Figure (cartoon, one colour):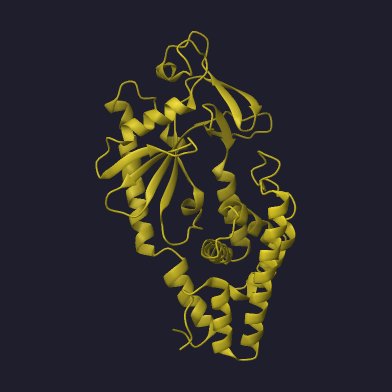
Amino acid sequence: MATTVISAFNDFQKNIVNLDSTTSTTARSSRNWLLDQISKFPENNDNFPNLYPEIDIGFGSFARKTKTRPLNDIDLMVGIKADGCTYYERSWDDIELNFPDNYSGKLKKYAKTFDSSALSSTRITNAFKSELSKVSQYSSAEIKRDGEAATLKLKSYTWNFDIVPCFLTSPDSYGNSYYLIPNRSGSWKKTNPKTDRDRLSVVNQNQSGKVLNVIRILKYWKQEKRVNIGSYLLEAMILYYYESKSNNTCSVYVDLELENVFNYLANSIINNVADPKNIQSNINDIDHYSRYSLSETFKKFAQLSSDARQLENEKKYRESINAWKKVFGDKFPDYG
C-alpha cells in the first residue's frame, strides 16, 4: 500500500523487482563453491580438459546486476586451456578450433571424429555435463536445448547454473581478444561478455548509478506483459538511449524516465540494432512485421506512462498509482 507515487515505486522496486540482497549474497556463495568443485574436474578425471580458471567469467543478467526476481539462472563461462589450438573463422558464429600438428593432448579425445583435427564443442559440453552430474548438492545435470551450456539444477535453491565451456583467443591485429563458446552445431562462436559488462558500468556511472533500476523495471515489465523481445536486446537498446544523453541526466525517480525510454524504444526497434560487442553487425533479429507490432506496444506504454505522470502532477495520487498498475500489473502497490 502507498499514498504517493514515489513510495509506490520505492516499494515496487525493493520488494517485487530487484533481487533481495540476501538472495544475491547466497547465490554468489553457491557460485563460488561450484567453481571450486569444477576446478577439481581434471583431478577427478584424467581425461578431462585442463582448465584455465584465470579466464572464468560470469555473464548474463545476474553478472551484470540487471537480473529481476525471481533469480532462476546464473550463467558462468568456464575457461579451458587451448593447448596451442588455432581457429578458423567462417563467420562469427561458425568457427573451427583445430589441433596443432601431431597433437596428442587431452583435447584430442574430444575431436569431432576419431581422425578429425577439429575440436567438438558438443563433446566438450557433454564432458562438463558428465562431471557436473557427480557434484553433490545438485539434483541433475542436463544439456540445454541450444547445446551451448550444461545446466545444473540445485536441490536447495530456486536457481540453476548454466555452465558454458570457453576458450580465449590471442589478441587479433586490432588488439581484441574473444571468448569462443559452443554454437549449435558442434563448432564454436565468438562472444565477449567483458564488453557488455564494461559498457553497462560506464553508462551507469555516467548517470550516477541510476540506469540499473530503469533496466530492471523495464525487464520486469517485459516479463509481466509478455512482450516478445529478448532481454539482451532490450537492455542493449536502453543503454544506447542513455549513451545518447548527457551525463547525470537520468532521474533518481524511475517513473520520470519511462515515457522517454518507451518512445525511444518505439522508434529504434523498427531498425537494425548494432552489436555493442562489434562481433555481428545487427542484434535485432526480429522480423519486419513484429518490429512494427513491438513499436506500437512501446508507444502504447509511453502514453500510459505519460497519463500516469499527468495524474501525479495534478496531485491525483490514487488515480496515478492505478494508472501505473496498468503499466506494471497487479503487483504494483495499491493506493492506501
